[in-house]
Image (cartoon, rainbow, N blue to C red; front, side):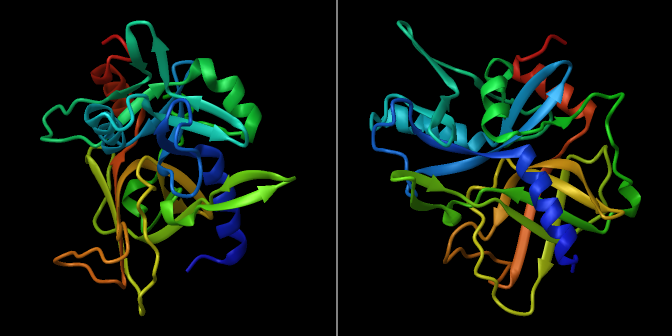
Length: 274
């Protein structure tokens, strides 16, 4: 296991890369509290623009709420203290979403979506001093793929939110979680998926619904190096059943993050010219 001091440092670094992304009404109908569902968003810098990556299934949940009519203005929203930034424009013609699903290429399904948040970045960075993962090919810190042993995934679990009162005002307090586990198989920049998995001695009682969209890292030389965008964590909620996993297991899967992959994702999402 990692020593306490570096673990805390890694958690602080991951918190600069990743924010909770709430699934709620653009006008805050229904409120904003511990019952508000969330995914995670990973910030990336590429070709002089800022992007927020998340999971496709969060977008699909928003779309489902709109279709059934329960929340016609449902959106994905970044929220910092009292500042709310819906990733949707409301126009006379209807809603325009900033978050674009990345269509699959040869894959049957790709659980990924991306928003260009360059216009929002001054607010985002001022509120919480977020720092994007730099995917500039000239500055990319490439992992030593063949030497990878331990991996980490960061995100905002839905179960780790609580309602609080700060200076007499209601606030929603969330906690970023850093999950450390063994790599499950060899990883490489030409492989689509990064998989981490560990079996503990006892049930761990952690649930990872909400971490999808967060960053994954390789732990090397006492540092965390970005390696993927999470799209699945298990167990998601209490009572989850899996044919191969038990309540002592942790499993996280992510899509391999490289400059070439990110460029391809932007093109496929219509956020960059080919």
